[in-house]
Amino acid sequence: MKKNSVQEILRKCFLVYQPIMRLRNYKKNEIYNYEVLLRIEGGKKFPKEEFALLSESDEINKLYLEWLFENLRKRIQYNPDIIFCVNLSPKQCTYRSTMDVLKSLHDINQHIRIEITEHEEVIYDTSQVEAFLNEMKKLNYMTGLDDVEVGQNTLLFTLKNINKINRLKLSLLPFSLISLNSQLLLVQFWNSIAKENNLEFVVEGIDTKDKAQVFREIGIELQQGFFWGEPEIIEN
Image (cartoon, rainbow, N blue to C red; front, side):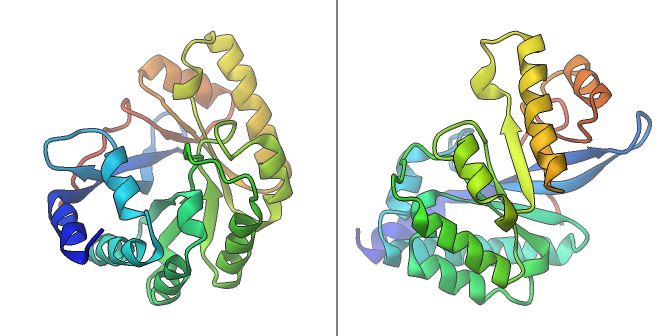
């Protein structure tokens, strides 16, 4: 894809931010982080086709990440007390451009958490992703695995890389067909893994007050979902 075509796609793209809440107690909740999400004009969901184009090669990925972090830098300036969580696909972790861009952000990296998505493009040799996580640790980036139990982010992959990361996130959305009791057991299992390894643990997909309360009662303080706020453009 030509550079002009990339720039045309990026002109239609924008970033939205979904809050990750910390529930210190039942009366005091606070925005702890924002997850940074890509959107395109006229759409409310993640633009899979456009993202595939923006990450199809090392060179194009560089243009995309430079655009993303240029926009994110402005939000960090206005929200210096918030950590922004940026998703990278396993494929992006294999690109030299990803590392180069992240190395250039040394002045703001303490405000950024890199989360590796489960993405549908399964990389069967995960050694490059593991090497990427090692490099992120050396650069003092906070890192995490997004949507554990799905795609690449299996229990085995998680345990193999547990000492390279700071956070686990479990989304309830892929497990909507199982009962709430089964969801609770799944969450308790992953929460136990997180606690044993001194990791933060986020449960995503909290869409009702009752669900927020049920998971808070079993110790889930970090929650994300439509009940707490939909992805939106945040003001300065």
